[in-house]
Length: 392
Image (tube, rainbow, N blue to C red; front, side, top):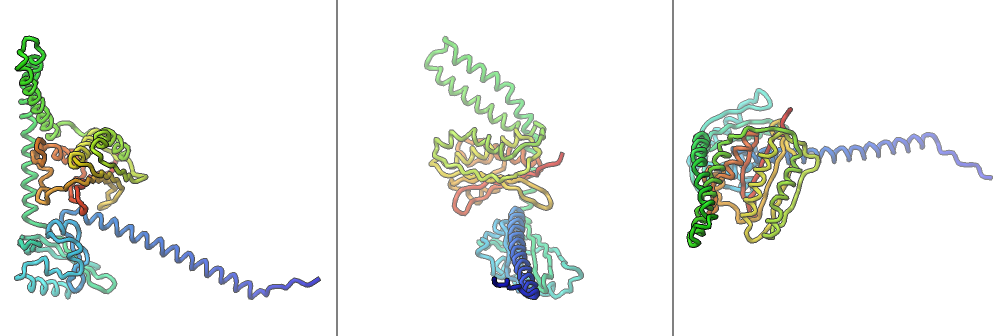
């Protein structure tokens, strides 16, 4: 019988040490992979937060070449992010100001940074892609990261900000006026509508007049609907909050128009995020907003198309939010009309009242949220709603 060979102790220790190092390397690779995924996720969330800002947010390197260009910058300057990345900031300035601004930024860059960051504010002129010059309020933040100087500028279109303020004041004035006017219209209108209905049903009414009376009755009902819309626009009804499943509300609202969408050959795609936190809001009012957006999307695709509903949980400035995107493949919206879509009485429909989106905006803002519209690169329009989940 042969004697079993004994493995020397030092080899056993070396094998164990090798296994341990391999395990450590594998753990390091896994940890770096997780860290990389976390960085990508954080970057995607940061880009999403930057893109909902109305202001232009632009980052530059030490040579004043653009490294970040958010959606707000695209809207204000008219350039796409692809057209600006790597380009000098000069393309956003009137030519006569380029030299002085470049020298100013160089002087600012040469200042010692007393802390990890320093900033300054001022007024200058910007230049859009079409050559239009306009005043902007600018805040520049200087950062030292890894020994390199990075600049981030936040620019606000002063003219547009003034227009938005005027628009807000007009909306408030219209809201105060409409409630009383609508009540005054509805009371006599109800009597007129009832009288026309009775006249059309009266056997003594000559048959040749019945059709005309029905037309008048229909127009009276339409006026009543407009008046009801004015009352809704005035936001007479208080918000009655309770906690509910936002995804489920989206599904139930979609069910209300699913038949009409099928008849028009509209394909529906639901991309509802799993684990979406419940929100504290007035479910009836939120459903009214979603229904209005779905109806608008339906009307935009008279020849068929695709409707995409997306929900997502996001964070913005420390707040936990839910986001809904309603995207259609219609013809899109004239860029000049995007800022007007939520104005009362503005409509792109032949028989529209122009109140639907104004009501939606009023409801969402009453909940502390935000709603906006943008054209999709592939065509069509996207409406984006953001709502806080709310606290008890």
